[in-house]
Every structure is written in structure tokens, then in C-alpha cells.
Image 1 (tube, helix red, strand yellow):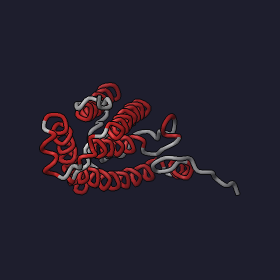
Image 2 (cartoon, rainbow, N blue to C red):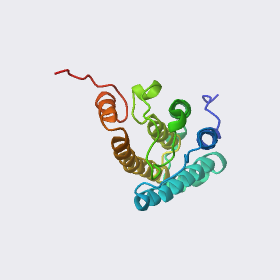
Image 3 (cartoon, rainbow, N blue to C red):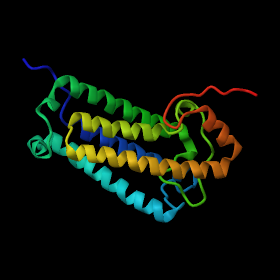
Image 4 (cartoon, rainbow, N blue to C red):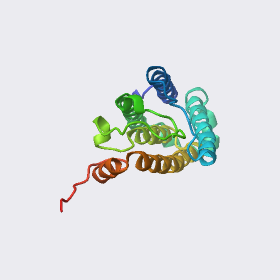
Length: 209
């Protein structure tokens, strides 16, 4: 009897769950706090390019996740190796998927009124330095990269590798825009926060003079 593997629909279901949770948080913040939580107004030309490419990356991730479930034979055409279906690798991917989804949802809740997709023209909301943000300045982006990495582990081929590379590149662009906006709005408070907490994860020891 072959080892039990996670269900083939798990990658698609997890990605759809992340999208749904993010959309609900955007609507909730806009309703409760009367702010625009989905906006790419700052550096609009650059962010508009990034926004289009984010949408393409998300669409491709969903397509590849759906094909892994409904048409796995197509993946061979993209170079997926035979060992990709081994149960230990699938379970590793499933754990990373679940951990990433939980990280994203928790961080969005902890951001409260500051949760945004993109950076609006008037800048970010109040600085958040509690919860997961005590250990990472960008836990949502860490979760997003983790989810796409999980998709690559589940189904490693040229398509998922391209989505992973695109996600990493777009994340670097977006993070730098957000950091610039946070420095401009919060000044010294953000500088102190950035000195204590890593961009991706980890706290830094500060030396008092």
C-alpha cells in the first residue's frame, strides 16, 4: 500500500483561501475605518506595473495549482520530475501551505486599520509593531513567498519556478516602496522599529551608547 499523501486539491484550496481572507480583510477595513485599503497610488507608475504583474503571478499560481489537481499529466510537459509526487515532499508542501496561510491571516488581523494592499498616495496607516510584527516587518509577504514556495515543492516545474521568482522580485519592489512610505510618515519611530526587527524575520540586539 503506497504512503498516504495530502489531497490533490490542497494547493488550490489554500491559495483560494488566502485570496478570500485577504479580500474580506480589505472590505472590513474599508467599511470599519473608512479608508481605501486597496490602492497603488504612491509611485503610481511603478506600482501599476507591479499590480499588473502581481495579478498575473496570482492567476498563474491558481492555474498551476488547478492543473496539479485536475490535469497532473500536463505538468510533465513543463518538466515536473517523477519524484515530485512522493508523499514526504507532498506533506512538507502541505505544512508550508498551512503555515503560510495562518501567518498571512494572523498578520492581517493584527494590522487592524493599517492593513493595505498596495501603498495609497497618502501613505500607510498607523505603525504596527505588535504580535507577529515584533519578529518580522513583513510577515504577510513572508507568508506569500511561503505559499508560492509550497506550490513549487508540491509541483516543481518551470512554471511554478517562474511564479516563485516573480513573487520574490515583486515582493522586493513592493517592500521598498512601503519602507520608503513608512519612513516618510513615521520618521524616527519607524527607524527605531527597523533597527530592532528584521525585514523578513528575527529581532536585532541594539547597543546603547
